[in-house]
Amino acid sequence: MNHHLKSNVIWSYDYELSSKDAISQIASMFSGVLPVHDHEGEIILTDETLNIFGDEDLVIRLSDIEQLYLGFDDAYPKHYIRNFGLFCQPLRITSNNGVRKTTIYLVLGYNGFNCSQTKTLFNLLQQILT
Image (cartoon, rainbow, N blue to C red):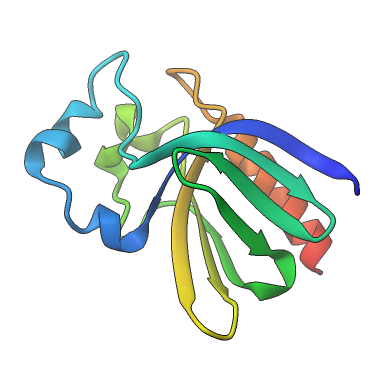
């Protein structure tokens, strides 16, 4: 099993983001504060799965991925990341395993300034899925 990418990750389900209060939204604009998220861990991309290990484990089969989107939307607006996302954008992954549809937002390798690993994952997933 090949590992295409391994990185630290902060992430949330879409329904978790909808319950964020104004204080947590504003806090992300200050130096030293991570972008808005609910979970932390490590992410590993293999030939067949996207695996997240941490405070909540999640395994997504790549064949279940319906949509990839790199950027901001109504659920994850620009003010959830310092500098209004100028140097970092979340990756939205929507998957459907036949039982449940799930949408998550990921930020990989955040170092206080950028999250270039997020774009790397986006590009790798596009290559693998096409």
